[in-house]
Image 1 (cartoon, rainbow, N blue to C red):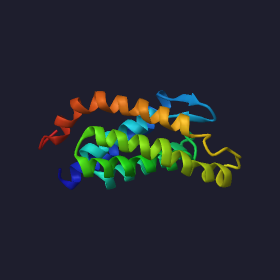
Image 2 (cartoon, one colour):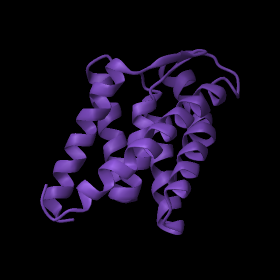
Image 3 (tube, helix red, strand yellow):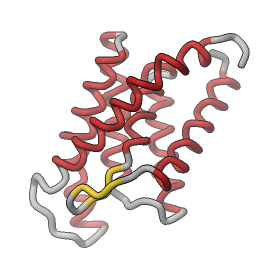
Length: 162
């Protein structure tokens, strides 16, 4: 994929992530689940690789926060999931690996990284496992979405022209 097409796909994924956050979310305890972000992490890990996936996750989190559609918790969950999904896919070259990376990255690592963010930046005292169930549920739902969508869009993105 050439750089122009890659940047265009990344911008489109950021737009989808922001738009998806306003339509598809659900409460999970003290946090809100945004499964579109997790679906995009898996899809972009498979199609674009780890670095673009992290850039997309950061872009979605930043725009969502600027528009008031999210909280600072978008960063630890989205970025940890993006890194893990991209690296797991790079190691194994399977969609399942990207899904496992997303769930471990967001559900475990991201949820634990969210604790200092909540305490220091959001002034919320939370327990060690306050975010784990919600982050795992969100990443599972997003991974299912990705598994359903990816076979349809991957061939389109791999074409020389769209």
